[in-house]
Amino acid sequence: MKKLRGIIPPMITPLKGNDELDREGAVRLVEHMLKGGVHALFILGTTGEAQSLTYNLRYEFVELVLKQVAGRVPVLVGVTDTSLDESVRLAEHAKQCGAEGVVAAAPYYFAASQQELIEYYTALADALPLPLYLYNMPSHVKVFLEAKTVAVLADHPNIVGLKDSSANMNYFETLIYLLGDREDFSLYVGPEELTGECVLMGADGGVNGGANMFPELYVEMFNAAEAGDLKRVRELQHRIMQISGSIYTVGKYGSSYLKGVKCSLSLLGICDDYLSWPYRKFRAEEREKIRKALEALGCSCVE
Image (cartoon, rainbow, N blue to C red; front, top):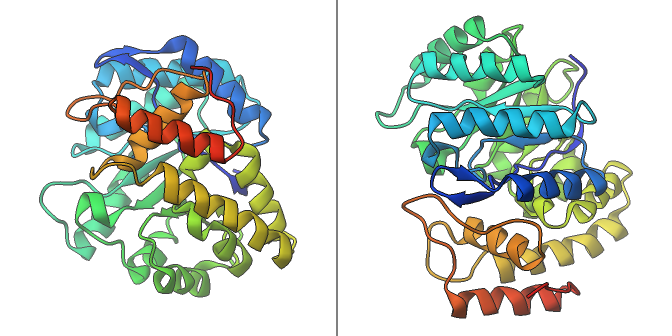
C-alpha cells in the first residue's frame, strides 16, 4: 500500500433524520472536498458521528461515498466498535466497496490496559482484510495509546499508521522520534490548529475537520509546511485559528465543533445540518452566530 500523505478530511455524515442519509448532500460534499484538492477521505470517524449511527446506515454510507469517489482518491473507513467482530464485518464491507484502509480507536467503555490494547489491535489487524490505521482519541475512549505501545504495534505488517487527536505535541514529537523515519508507517495529526507545526516536524498530513468546509485552505497549509515556507504557514495559521475560534466555540456543548461544522455546511448550501441523537443542531440564535463567522471569513451564505 502506497503511503498516504496530505490532507484527509474526516467527513461528516450528512443526515436528514436519525436513520436517514442526506444522500444528495453527501454527494455535493464529496465533490466539494475533491474539488478542493484533498488527498484522501476518512469516513465514519468522530466527525462522522459513527458511534451514534445505526449499522445499516454506516454500511449504506460506505457504499454511497465509495461509489461517488469512484477511485479518485483513497477512502479510509472508521471501524471503531466495542465488538471486534463488528469492526471486522464493517471492514469486509468497506473492502468490497473499494476502500483502501480502515481506522480504529480503542474499544470504549471499560478502559483497556496498554498490554490489552496491544493484544486487541494485534487480533484486529490479523482479522482485517484491509490495512489498519490506529486512532488515538483519549478524550472519547478514556485510554491513551502510549508511544511505546504504538511502536510495538507498528511492527505488525497490517498496521500502517496512526491518527493522533490528543493535541499533545510532546506525545506527537515522541512518535515522530520513534517512527518518523519509517516508510511503512504514517503519522497524521487531528487538531487542525497543529497541522502546520506537525507537518514541519515530519508528520505525513492532517485529518482536519475544517477541510469539510474549506478544503483548499488545509491543502495549502500542508503544501506550505511540506515546502518549509514558514511565512505562508504563519499566514494560513491565522485563518485556521479564526475558523477554530469562531465556528467551533459557539454554545457550551461538548459537540460545539461538530455542530459548527454541520451548521456551516448547511449555510454554505452543501448539506443538511441534522445531528444524530442525543445531539441537536444549532438553534436560530446560534445559527446566526455561525452565519456572521462565515461572512467574516469572506463566505457567502445561501440563506
